[in-house]
Length: 243
Image 1: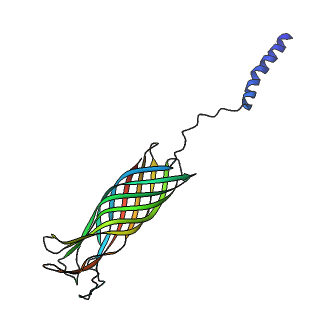
Image 2: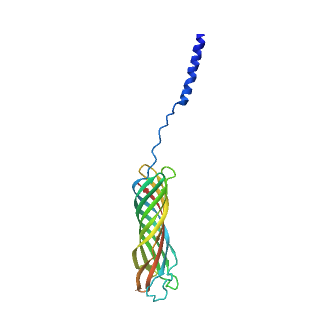
Image 3: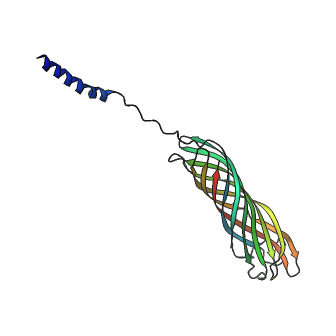
């Protein structure tokens, strides 16, 4: 009889621990690294592509030739590259990121077009952009850790040169550079690669104010050059590395 009781107790001891274990709290696995936080200052460098459209329009205030407001050229392509830097600051609240950013880039964008009738078609007109700076606000969303999608925009300024070439050799006959103001808007994607580094792809559209170049009437050896308004819009696609 004692042997039977001992065996029953032994069976109860073997069965009970799993039942107790089911009621005990399970220890959580070690937590993953903390989510990346976008808050803080940053600086970076960039390189990319630039392209756009430009046009020359008669802006002679004296209207001596009776052609005021007529296009001197058709719209023509301007293209090149950019290289520059940026600084900014981000604030992150939950999955939203807001920030301010400024950048400055050297630009090699240029294009050229011959004049069209009724203007002298031997003459040609070139637009060159030498630099671009923007000051912008950013608003973004973090759908998953270390990934940021954002929109951006505000104001821009650029150094733009207009060149008139009036002979077959196309040596520069007259050139003038001016700073142009404008507005910019765009968006991009940014990925945090390491704790202190991120990589960004960004597109910006820049619309610059129209500006008139050259004196009202300039007499060159072979041409009477009239004042001309130069239109220009820009598209920029850049890759940024930021710290």
